Image 1 (cartoon, helix red, strand yellow):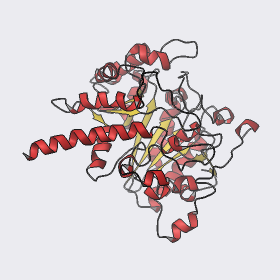
Image 2 (cartoon, one colour):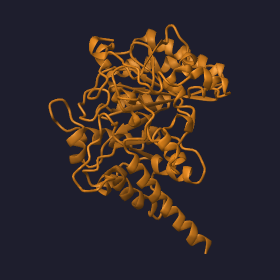
Image 3 (cartoon, helix red, strand yellow):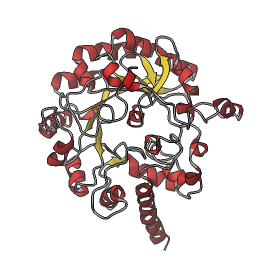
Length: 405
């Protein structure tokens, strides 16, 4: 860690959460189910909202450009060992970056082969890759089809809207290149490895135009993500006069999606809110109180917390552990992991007193950060989440009442 990356541990959870007391109370850790592998540290795009390159933590500058075989083999061993220790039926490996396709097809083939070879026991390894889509071509998709690697692509809707945020370093937009890759991915030869689209919410754009643009690729799923922001680095709010512009944008799409005569696509945020309102559980980090069971391995082998925390402060993801010296179990008692596995006990008093807290779950953990006290705050998107949840509840309650007549 360089001079500009000095970490200052926040009050919550690093200095205030008593992990020993949590364990004495009988709360046992939830083993990691997902490992995010940073196979390449750089990106060929320069998206203006990227939490890795444009926000508080700049540790990418000190990381190796690309992960070595020694590092990923050590990671594979730790991952398989974790699965065996906890008798896990499945684990998921997500290849990430930067832009993971910059690692090249040959390196990715070696990596995938080594991970498959490490999982010879009873645990099934699911493999996915999250890419910006600019480098998709037939040879790389042949590799993913051969090895059953699911492909998720980031795209922010209409070409002009996408290109206002997701650009090359020289200012060129990326939509045209991504469209070419998506048309290849969604064709009959490769559509079975298409996992879906990831889109970052931008309330200054037309939500229905964005949704319709995404639907043209017939994705099995769409993830609509709030941009990473916090109380010390608040989100942009367009001058519309609305106090909940992010909710307004999402509600417009929700109504279009909910009122469709047949199910067009899975939208995890909406489905999670509906499930949680009905007393079920969520699957994402954005809402709900389910334990977060994901860990990151950087290109140098460092075991880190989820990388969205890079939006908070320098060193926010660091655990001091590596795959060469430590097991993944060693990370389960890190305050930053424990805080995300103890449910409502980790929420602020404001959140605990709110009747919506079991649905919103306090919002995304990274969005709760404030420099003075850390992560025990409501989400900086609190008003937006509340408005969305109340709207979904109203729509569902109305339908249930009508069916009961």
